[in-house]
Amino acid sequence: MSKEPKDPNVVGGYLPDETPPFWKLILYALQQIIVMFPATILVALLTGFHLATTIFASGFATLGFILVTKRKIPLYYGSSFSYLSAIIGLTGGVAFGEVLPDSVISGVQFGIIASGLVSIVAGIIVSRFGRKSIEKVLPATVTGPIAMVIGLTLAANALGDAAPVAGATGITGTNWVWVVSLVTLIATILFSVYMKGFLGQIPLLLGPIVGCITAGIILLVTKESMFRALPAAAMAGTQIISGVIAIPHFTLPRVDWIALAAIMPIAIATIPESTAHVFQLDIYVNDLAKKKGTGKTYDIGDRLGSNLFGDGLGDILASLFGGPAGTNYGENISTMAITKVFSTAVLIAAAIIAMILAFVSPVVNVIYSIPQAVIGGIEIFLFGAIAAQGIAIMIDRQCDMFDARNIAVIAVIMIVGIGGQYKFGGMIPFFGMQVPCIAGAAVAGILLNLLLSIGRKKEEKEAE
Image (cartoon, rainbow, N blue to C red; front, side, top):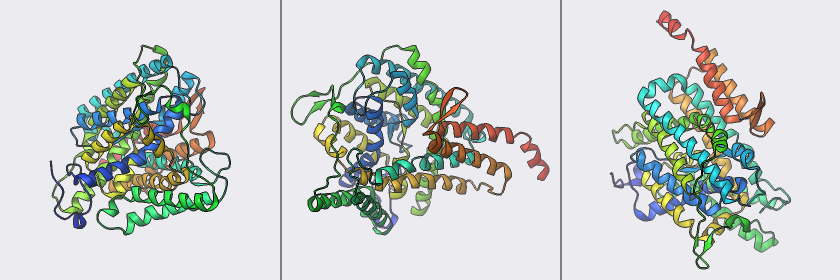
């Protein structure tokens, strides 16, 4: 394993097999935790899973993913929104922050484990037939727009968190909210663009700190608090050992065939999203390796099968304890792309810290208390970066944007994905089914691409 480069201020960033010094490692890891935390705990709060258990499961699943992929793919595993409708439809849902009965969670766990097996089988198939075969089904004209849709469908979440909304949890209805979110956004961008060396690699840690300081000053001057309080029900079931330490509430899976039928198929819809993430990483890691002059080529794009296998294992490991289904996070990939820190050692540290934090209830409360306006400020940057990475995939693969077939595939994916989010709230009604917009966009793009590819090889040979 490579150690830190002699002069990181010159070379800038860390490749997957490079390890930063310990104190930098911890700060980079904390940055990864901050960007994954809002979405990961939101899934738990919406679906009725235990919050501390969810945090622990995300770290444990990340460790499993990194180890099974032999530390070659730097990804963080967090709770997935793709499974929300299936879980809520199965359980009937709960009030925000309340927790489901153990018997219900145990049944859902069985369905999530089954979905993990689907991803594992898909990974084995992809590994067997190779990258070129999968790129025929998932070319850059499909994975690029999917990455863009992932980022753009989150745009409303980012602005919703950044804007003043009277009566919302942890948000005031005054324009001071805009001050906090804009200060956070601008500070984060300035840190990432103009700071050099180490400080330029932790903008998503420094930006939120500036935002929280701004919110604190506003509290002192106006008496308006934007800091949030974690719902008491969210920590139900945790076993308090002292005022600081609390053991997460773990549950064991039980056989539930209805849960299996409802949740297992969702795994198929997440494969294009996971594929887009791997191709994003491949582009950015190799670009950094080229700029650093290492002479190395990182075959992350060829490890799609390993990624899917690890993703499935992550579902299984997370659900063994009572955590929700998950996936590798675009937010964390954007963080790596912005900071140029792709070290798998950083993600291992982030996973371990997350598991420890799950046992320290005051820390969970402190992280949750970060003003929503601060979260919204960094989300504008992060989610936009996810969309930009989709464009990078198509540029890197030299997609012909004047080709009518390519335009058709890209157009359909973008409109189905984005239109499904903003017209139907993310779930498109289709012949009596509720289809997640990203999954629907992916399936529509894949099928259209395959249809328009009929006879294409013959035409290309004739043109040659």
